[in-house]
Image 1 (cartoon, rainbow, N blue to C red):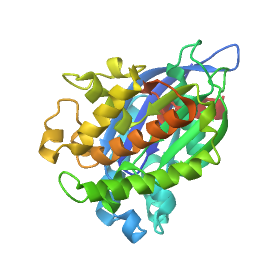
Image 2 (cartoon, rainbow, N blue to C red; image 1 turned 180 degrees about the vertical axis):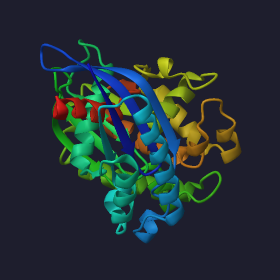
Image 3 (cartoon, rainbow, N blue to C red; image 1 turned 120 degrees about the horizontal axis):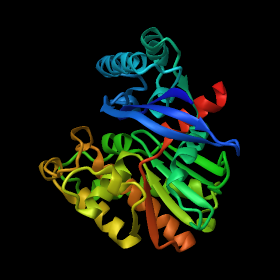
Length: 322
């Protein structure tokens, strides 16, 4: 048994998973959560416009990193991996961020490619699927700055993607680029939708969407849409994880969230305060992905996974250090 930590620093949030890893005879590994945390730090604030990480965003993120480092020490973590994704890939001043994380955590953050981000998300997300779920599975990870689509067979000790792509459409990026009004105007929504659809056309040339047997969504935009579709009284991960809903129900939830005013979204009992401003764009991205996949493959249900890149990072630590 090895105790590891994975940290995922995206455009909108920074998340920590401390887990015990037990290796299986088939070469795979099982994770048991010790603690799983998320803070909205909005590292990608303004990056799409300026090309740089804002000083106040860096401060928020490094403060959270310091708290996570203390928790790793407190829980006796033996190995840690810090992964940074879209916002950091795009920033000219990322060296300031890298130095700050290294100083606080003792290990440098890895600014990974969209391809590796997709592979880690896939490895984590497919843990929710049953043995009889039809393959291949398409895992869709909607982040703040980017969205990853990754197709592969979910079985085996180390599920490996067959095809993947990272698109520069995410809930923070689409909000900052298009959705300025409260609620968004029809013209703003159409501009964002055109942006997303153009990206999905590029994705379809690389990832064969007509082969999708099971559609799986991960990350905060997707889990919040699922909570909305289920009409939960609070955020209940045990109800959300593995939820399989009809396509029409998910699309209705997406459209409803997109059309609400900010105050209405903030009042929802399962809405994280840091997601209020960007959930409309996240729901729009998810809806457009679903529509494109349904048109190509005919899938009728959508599965939500609470397991995602964090789980993939933790598993990668175990493989690398095992």
